[in-house]
Image (cartoon, rainbow, N blue to C red):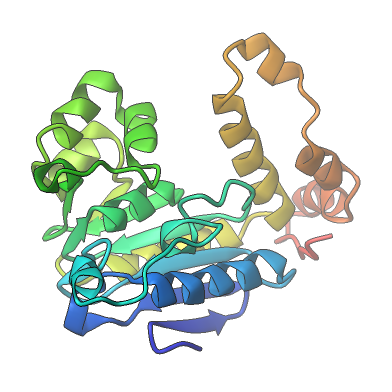
Amino acid sequence: MSEYCKVEREGALTIVTLTRPERRNALHVEANEALQEVWDDYAADPDQHVAILTGGPDYFCAGNDLKWQAEGGRVGGVRSGFAGLCYRFDLDKPIIAAVNGIAMGGGFETVLNCDIVIADETARFALPEVRYGMAALAGGIHRLTRTIGRQRAMGIYLTGRMVSAAEGKDLGFVTDIAAPHEALSVAREWAATLLENGPLALQASKHVALQGLSTPDISVACRTEYWPVQHMKQSDDYVEGPLAFAQKRKPEWKGR
């Protein structure tokens, strides 16, 4: 537990809530260090299979805490990037973003690093760095371009404009829209659906999808032997899934 975030575990679900409301959940180096430890723990825990990341009712995350920096606070980065996530390229467990209110700069970049994005109707997204003589270098430029295409992405990060939840869904980076302040509730529903599935199958699917994005030739991507797939095929769950289907019952997943 940290003063910068709250971590709750409900069975195989981890819920991480940003808790810097006085700074609109903007993150400084200490908060990034705390979140890096949270995600390290989630990645290493064999009993945790799905995570939700959320913030306050009005701000998911306002990005980098520039006021802290201006006040002379300690600055610096962490190995796994902003929010402990944006440079983390080896986490195969799924993360759902539950976004209420504003996700700006690093906050939006963190959302783009999540696998499923639930935004309430009031949610707004922006990469405003260019307005301050900077650029969205925590992965936002690359992820947004890969997610929605070059011209549409440049129309966002070259202007710094705000994007609504509805437009985000039309563009493709928002998965589902919730009623105001209900993003977490809807994210829980999505998490419950994910948790009905084989945890190793979830991890294998995410790994294959993300690794495949960096393989230009789809024939090579389809023939590649990814290690999480081999792990899945050698697991007890790989036997349990078809057996439960044949016996017309719910699978009893072991995660091994």
